[in-house]
Image (cartoon, rainbow, N blue to C red; front, top):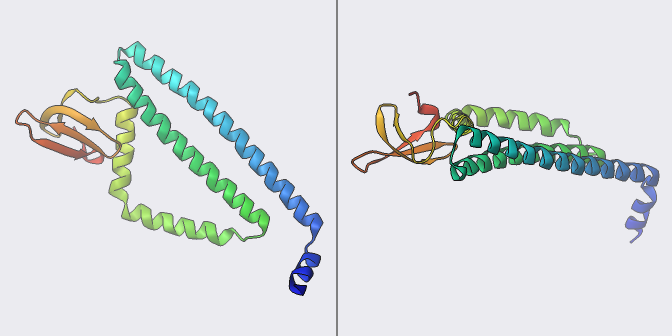
Length: 176
């Protein structure tokens, strides 16, 4: 019991109060950024819907594409914001974040080297969906194989030919 009493006496309450205030300010700013992000995404979604109408795209297909893009952007932005807030709060609590950032950089480099094909497929899929190059239900010839497009995801495009054979193409490998 004496240990706890000594520990409480050694705490610099002014510094603790200032750190708590800074953490509250960081959390308030993060909440404000989230609200701005939500408004931005709503406007972005409306703009994409208008573009889809102008081009004459069916509303159901346009909505699927828009939801996919908005979900991806929302997840990436919230992940970046969450990591930033966590690092700032850890720094404010007294944890050294330099080694954490360096470790994350080394880990990111290792994952980047190991997952080049996956990243290439995801980026290509993102642009296929964003630019509306092909849609579900289109008849397309992909890398010399013709058929009906059954599914488009960020990583793969699924095509069914006239014989009923299903072909799965990684989006990063689609050249024509």
